[in-house]
Each structure stands twice: as C-alpha cells, then as structure tokens.
Image (tube, rainbow, N blue to C red):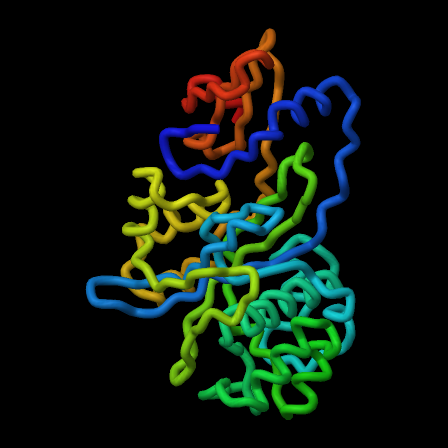
Length: 301
C-alpha cells in the first residue's frame, strides 16, 4: 500500500479490520513490552538512538524503532534494584508493583540486549562505564537466548538496576486487528558516560544516532518508515534542547494508553489513533483497498 509519508501500514489490515467489525476476528491479548528512547547531546541539541528492523521481520519489517521488546516472565522476580521502588513505578505506569518491576526491568534488559547499553551500576549512584569485551558479549547473548535471567546476570556482576535513570514517556497498545499485539511503555534515558551503542540485535540491519527533527523529516518525505508510536514520540522530543530537559519533563508526561480505533462508514474504513490526528487513514471499499487517503477530517479522536 502507498502512503504520502513513511507510516507503516500492513496490506492485510483492511481485511482484518472488516473481519473485526463483523465479529469474525477475536483480538489477541497484547503482550507487555518496553522500549527506550536513548538520548545523548549533539551540537545544537540532542540525538536519539534508532535501529532499522530487518525487512524479513514478521512485525514492522523495515521500520525504524528504538531498542525494546517483550517482558520476560522472570522480570517479575526479585532483581537487584536502585532508584524509585516498584510500588512507585506502579503508580506512574498504571499497573501493579510486580508488573511495574517487570516493565522497568524489560526496558533496561532490552536496551542492553539490542544496543549494548546497560543502565546499571555496582552502587545505587554509579553506572558501569564499559560493556564491551568477550565476557560481556557472552552474557548478553545468554540473555537474548533466555538462558540467563536479567536478575541472575546482575547478581553475577554485582550490579543493581538503576530505575532512576529512566523516565516514563508514553504508552501505546497495538491495534486490536493486528496479529501481534503489544502493550508498550516508552521510556527516555541518557546514554551513560563511557558507554557506546552498537548494533547488538539480530533483528536490526542498521543503527543510527539522529536528531529527532532530521528523522521526522525523513519520515515526512517517505524515506524512513515508522509505526505511529515511533514517529509520535520522536516528534514529542522537538521542544527540548537538552537531554536533561527531556528527563525533567518525563514526570509530567501523560501515560494514558493510545489504542487505534477502526470503524466502517459505508464501505470505507476510517482508522484513527485518538489524540493523534496525523495518523488517520481513510481506506476505500474492499475492491480498491490499495487506495489510502491520509487526513484528519474523519478522526475519531
């Protein structure tokens, strides 16, 4: 399907949306997930770390995203911890304490697994300065394969997870008509001093540090493909000139879940994300599903 920008839009969505509206499709339960907008200073502002998912990936292949992934059930177990307690995170994230711990743990673990960056230290006020070397890589690979839990990894290293280095930024839930659904919390964090990002993910074929405005412009030109949560959070960084400003603003961010709505107007599908009019799509009748007209006039927001 063609669009005027880089919005990710799978070709099977119209048929699945119609099946959902007819009661023929039962939505799958979303899996809890976390993703991190890793930030650092650059000349004239800030930069964000992004990766491009391999085109062969079943979900959002070819789209730019941030390091992240699903919660591992073991993320709810006791983990060496520093910073705001899980109970405090629960109030912020809108979940229970065990769930909040798992979500924060997933954010830190996935950032290490996919970017080689670890938000943990030997003491509550320190962060590891270097995560390179064969021993680190062997343990990172064991985390990816789930041979090693994140709690076990931290205990082996004598480290504590630094929950205070994260700021909650947004929450998006994959539409009900999508085959693979995630309830994803987006976090912001500064790249720790001394650490370097790398493409540690088998799911990505490219990683970049980019100014948010530059990446957004690439999306607007149709050169960079992104899912609505990605471009939305990318644009939301626009008002901030420094990493510290972003982190300071995270405490006031609205974490109301964003969930797409789809409705039929005659034979036309109107697909919208409440509060985000730029993503509204009008999809013509079934015999012409290749024709998409972007626009916000029919937004169900």
